[in-house]
Length: 534
Image (tube, rainbow, N blue to C red; front, side):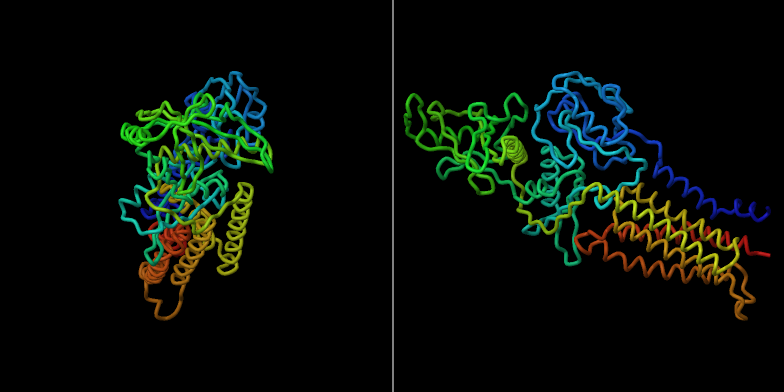
């Protein structure tokens, strides 16, 4: 009993206990968390107009708003949410209850563009996932989604790189993707990369939006009238002035159907003046009862012609600020053509609002993982972790055959896993498969260090007979610190290798080693000293 009292009177052990409790608060585990968490809210959807906001992707998972009921029907899982949402009739009042608020709104179907991602709600415009039970942020390897590694065609200054990331963030958010993390990375040669991670979106949608520079120009002849970005003061994105063109609709074409979209935009005063100057010299042509100017206005996206529009004779020499933009989408069926038309419209609207990217980006690598595969990876990782702890426990018991030596080793090993996860949650570091590998390396190194400390303490050789406990532990810590320095130094290049894709491995390894040397190893050494003293 006196040894137990000594353990709990030791300062280093109390530092270890307090740090462990703080990391548990950072993880914030809640195994009873129910409902579904909001991943994304579509712009102009029923939910968006009711005031439901998309979460900030950098917020801790446990702080995200959770939907617990729709029309008083409990929503226990993601599958149940989409089942309930699909059965909602159009133009009925919906009561959506979250753990924080209750929202009442009209279910206005089709009042927003096509939704993105593997998980889609047919009506409400909200994509969700099963409510998280901890603040541990899972990487795409474990939760599913898309990762795209992009490289600028030319090297950018830090200011231009920041502007590029800001433009991409705005573009993806306007496109309806809010659960997005965009970060810069460098390799060992100094090459610049941009890594985009999006949960719940498929690879083709992301590639289509990011692979091209998004340079939009409207030309009459060879003269540019306006460009996307600064020349555009407003782009309509609501059902009242954007959607399938009622004058054209959808028609049968060879191989399927084609649908035409139409939306209105407002030009700046300078762009309107350019249009007036260019059109003032054009002739007026008559086709039946209609009068048009002698040249059309051509719309180019990334230097490719996407549409050609006739110019009404009424606009000759006029500084018109309100004009309509149109385009089309095709598909094997009418519904597919409508969806493609809406997707093309949304992409064009987004580029008109954000303007072109300051430089073209090349896609270096894309990864797309389904949520089900991510859950399988996570289950396997947990199983391997449990088997590893059992294996280490067995070997330590066989090696020392003394419970009072083996027990502290097992306690520290198990707690180190939670400490690493806690620090990662506190730093908002994503945990991916590479990160789990880093945890395993850190735990393996931790076991080695504890065995070194234990063996140095128990050594009976002649030169050790006259050393006290403190001197023996000091010798052991020289070995531990030297190993820590060497391993940490070897991890630093991995922060940049492979465009930063091994960063999770390096960070979790460094976190684990640092926790060990400064928190758990000193506490373990004190435990061993107290337990083994005669």
